[in-house]
Amino acid sequence: MTTNEEVSSYIDYDTFLSPTFTPTAFANSLVTSTNNASDLTVDLTTPLSKVLFDLQEIDTHIHDITTKSALPLLQHAKTQSTAADKLAQQVDSQIQTLTESYHRLEREVIERHAVAEEVRLAASRLWVTVKIGRSVARALLLGRSLERDMAEAMTAATGVVSTTNPAPVAESHAALVHAAYTLQTLRALFNASGRDEDGEHLSRINVLNTLRTDLITPSEQKLKSRAQQIIREFSLSSLTQLAATTPVSNPAAPVSINGTQQQQQQPSTTLPPETTHETKSRTVSALQTLYLLSPPLPTAATSDTSFQPTLLLNALTTYLQTSLTSSIASLTRALSSLPTLPRTLTETSARCQNITALEQLLASTPPTSKHPLLEVHNSRLSETNLLLVGPANLLQPLLAALDTASLPSYFWRSLSSGLAPRVAEILAKGGVAARSLRGAKERVRALLREAVINGVEGARRDDAEGGLNWEREVAVFVGSVLGALGR
Image (cartoon, rainbow, N blue to C red; front, top):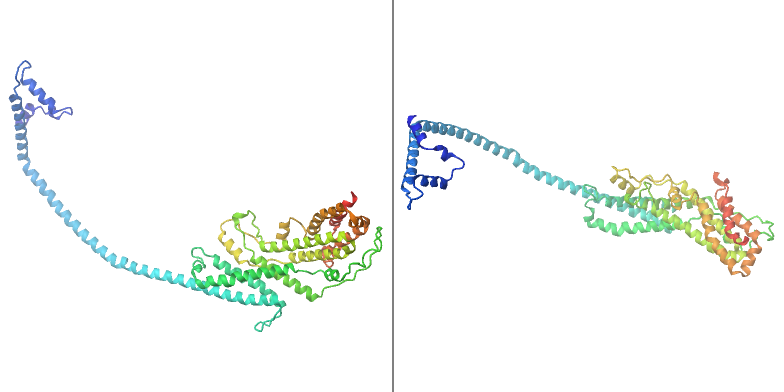
């Protein structure tokens, strides 16, 4: 301890351990402390000897400490080495156990998992194959059913009874609806092309692509054409035959034109019940066919949740517009030649009776209970509140599209609005037609009124709505023709 104290007192450890210690500053202090500033030469031997002496003392001090602490250091190193050997042995045993566990897991889990993954992949591919096979088989069965229904429907259209299907022609009109339902079922199957849906891979099957191009698309065009033709040819009016047999000089016209309405009784013609029933059943089949063939509009295109059968609405609107166009053209010619007016008004009343009968038929005809494409459309939007809902009957969407409460009222009001400018042209041209029209004003008024009443109430004679008041339509129609005469 005495030696340590002397060494500690001799060597300035604080200077060497100071954070601000620098070798250059320490060397400068040694040189300046051993030399005078006025000396011409600098003696470096003394400061160098001091530094060497300090180093020797520090080395001696380290050697003494190491010699005294050698045995404890060796014992400590031996203890650490022994502990490290024991730890290494324990770690080696644990590593060996872990390695054996890994190999066992590899045999029991990884290898089995690889085999199970192969089985799973094979099973999933087999399931996809089975699903495709089932979908293809279903599509082919539906295609065969569609082909059979189309044969029956076309038999009804041509009136030729097939040897393989000797059913009456009247009963074959239901094949239109069956064919339309089958066709839309096929469409729904092909449209279900989402992930994990039945029609996911059907677009890659050549035979189904051929089925779509050679059977489905032509059948859809034939069904639409046939249904539209039936609606265009719809007629239940008993006045149609009467108008065809009425001569130009109508005996039912008043004898005089001075306002006295002296009309003769018109002969009545009634369609046979068989014809009426056949026409109604054929028209109902056509209406339901077009309803089924109408695709559901995308929900994003409309905020209305009611299903709009576009093909049906287009066919019915075309039927109404054709009746209006024909009536306006024929009435314009008849007003220029009054002897033909009674016959023309009879034809117009017949068209209105057909429209009235069509309205009754639409009101009593519910839509088909199932619409395949509508069901698929709603199933994809089942989590939203934008599901499309079918109408209660086939008349509702037509009235909503035309913005009217009644088809006969729509007919007479539209006819009046289209006829008024034609009458104005006749009067503006003058001549015999204008003078005859002015002279027979009261006779024309009576004929126009009778035409509206016959057209509206004739088809509703046996209906509870037959007693409705149609004076407003009478006034509008009469005013469209005679309104210009009063000015």
